[in-house]
Picture 1 (cartoon, rainbow, N blue to C red):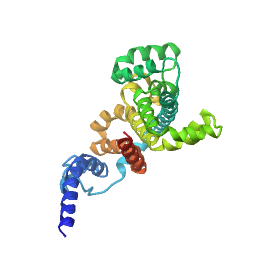
Picture 2 (cartoon, rainbow, N blue to C red):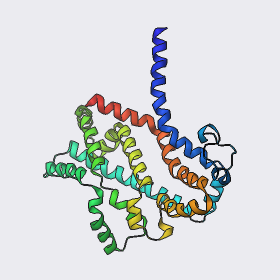
Picture 3 (cartoon, rainbow, N blue to C red):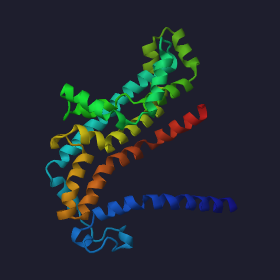
Picture 4 (cartoon, one colour):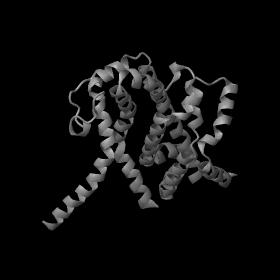
Length: 279
C-alpha cells in the first residue's frame, strides 16, 4: 500500500511540471477555436481560456480559404520529407563507412565531421546564398533541401550507433559470402532502425520549423514554406482578422510535428535506451 502511494505521488510530481509546460500549447489550441469578437474582449473567459467556449471552426476555415496556405503546407511537406530522406541516405552510408570500413583519410574525415558540429549554420549563409545564386537555384525545392543534407550530427549519430553493433554479426555474414553492400542493406540497416527513426524525426522537425534559410532563399510567395508563409500574413491577421486566426496558424504549423512524434516516440526511446546500454 505504501509503495502504491509513493508511486501515485511520483506520478503527480512528474505530471504537474509536464502540465505547466503544456499550458501555452493548450492555450493556443483553445484560442484557435474561439470567435475573434470574444477574444477581442478577453482571452480568459473560461478556466483561464483553456476551454474554448463558445466553440467555432471559423478561424481554420478562414485560414485555409486564404489561397496560398495549402500551397505553403505542401511546400513544407515536400521540403521536410525530401530533406529527411536525403539526410538518412547520406548519414547512414557515411556513418557505416566511418564506423566499419578502412580507407585512406578516414580519421581526417571524422575530424572534419567533428569540426562541422562546432560551426554555426549562420556562418555559412553568405557562401551558400552566393553559390545557389550562381547556380540559379533559389526559389526551388532543391535550394531549400540541399544545404541541410550533409548534417555532421547525423553522420556522427549513425557512426556511433554502427560502432556499437557487435562485429560478430558482420563476420558471420561475410563467412556466408555476403558482400559489404548486402551486409549494410540486409543486416545493418534493420538493426539501426531506432537510430534512423530518431534521426528522421529530428530532421523532419528541423526542416518543418526552419524559418531563416527559406526566408533567405525563397523570395516568391508560391515557394514559401508554411512557417515563412504564415509569418508573412500574421501582421495582417493581427490587425484585421484577430487573435483566433493567429492561434489557428500556429496550430496548423505545429500539428504535423506533434503527430509524427506521437506515432514514432517509441523508436526514439529505443534509440536512447540502446545508446545508453551499448555505450
